[in-house]
Length: 211
Image 1 (tube, rainbow, N blue to C red):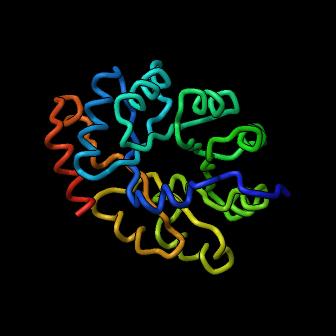
Image 2: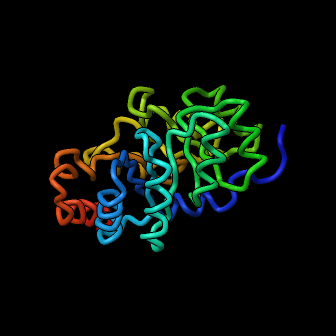
Image 3: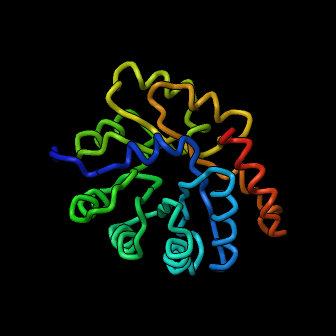
């Protein structure tokens, strides 16, 4: 069992965000415009996934261009990616799962890490390793709000950021749960809107959430 805090400040970041836009980006210019549009609408914490070849370089440029935004890196699959996320200045890192390699890298580094879990055993393992703040993924497939309610009884010390299958019609139900700090999703960045570079529309969607 690990001792100490491997997630410094992460709870406060997520609780302050409440809704975490999960972004898959391309060229830096478009990513910067997208992040600025979200920030203008009040969403100033974002997760940029490592799902494109230039993702890390784009993250670094977004961080420099948008100092008012807390930028995290998502889809971190191994220790090398976690270290790379810290190297470009990301404020936190997110993984879809939990591995020994990532646990070790998280304890060796300084970047707060949000591991993903899908079962009670995985949640207990993460907590024992020093990670009480967890990503529940894929939330809707696993049981959504009903699962979170079930987890709260035996594991009230754990907090979650559920992602996966959450949208405009359901995110408030997740946020109403006592063990949910925030929810992650991409419903506020529709692909066709981003492709059209309709940044005012993105800002409007963000304002609907923050209102």
